[in-house]
Length: 463
Image (cartoon, rainbow, N blue to C red; front, side, top):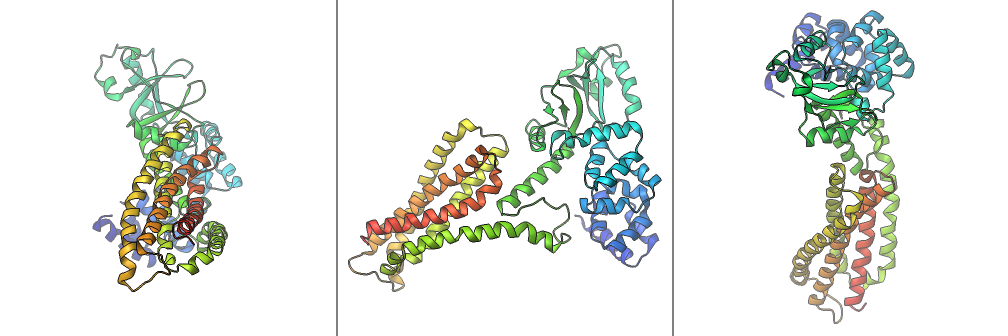
């Protein structure tokens, strides 16, 4: 955010706090809807009402699509039905559907009935698609022409729709049954003779997506193929609408946030409100579940400790390196899990790639484990004597260092494979890899690390 914008927002905050309508209107007039939405979101209910009364329906038409879902219904309710109609009819249909999905069912029905008949039918059609599908994110305000038209016919056909069409960057060509044939750029229309047939200059459109497909797949296609628009079709390849590049940015942000929260054990639907504006109870509810589950699973580690209690009593110095061995497994397992989940999200891995993934991560685990084993093994041999630690009986520091090194190498190698296998296994049984991986790895590598460590110690140190 620029210093100039920060200053404007700061002055606007002061004007709003002082209930200075003229100054508030003047300062907010040139703000981008996203910045105005941020200013609006940060206020209490009375102050939000002041902003609505001061700025009016025209200013809030574009702001509606930017504010958190929890404020949409409250904001619309502050306008008269005629104002609501003007606002809703001026909003692009993909944003309108998002807004209507954020209000209660009874209000949704009331708001839809404010629209004209054509818009009502279009909106109800879009609402039938899931919120997280390509159909739920598309806009139907797309430029389309017939292959049998000439360039002049096409321009004449498009001219009346210039204002209502979301973008003219790509114009899609359809047949008489609305099936997608190809696309053409606006400049191709501008620089070809008027009597040229569209079928002679169109480019075949080999990238499209089904309306029922997941929104993340749509965003990945836009990014992978560097598309400005991605056509959305039905099972018969009829053109239904398009997803734009700015939609892809929103989808990627939403999906990235969701994956980060899942990996951290935060459950529930992500909030559109900023961190500070999200209610304390909402934070509590979304975090508490996994914390309770992880706390219970951690008891398994305690059982392992109890099982090998005598080993620790015999060689207390083993306790010095135990946390490091367990943590190394968690770190390498987490790295492997993150890389596999990312590759799965980008569509780089299929079910038949499972063997290659495990083999790759196993070899990587051996290399990483070997590196750590050599380094920490040397530390285990020469470090403890420097600080005055001793070992019982005939156990030498060389043998002790070998124990730590072998256990650490084995733990890193197995944890890397476990970290790679868990997301793949979760997907195979229809579970979300991002949700399962983090807590499962935490428990699995803690337990496996202790078992490996104490088993190796008993074997080499003859305990």
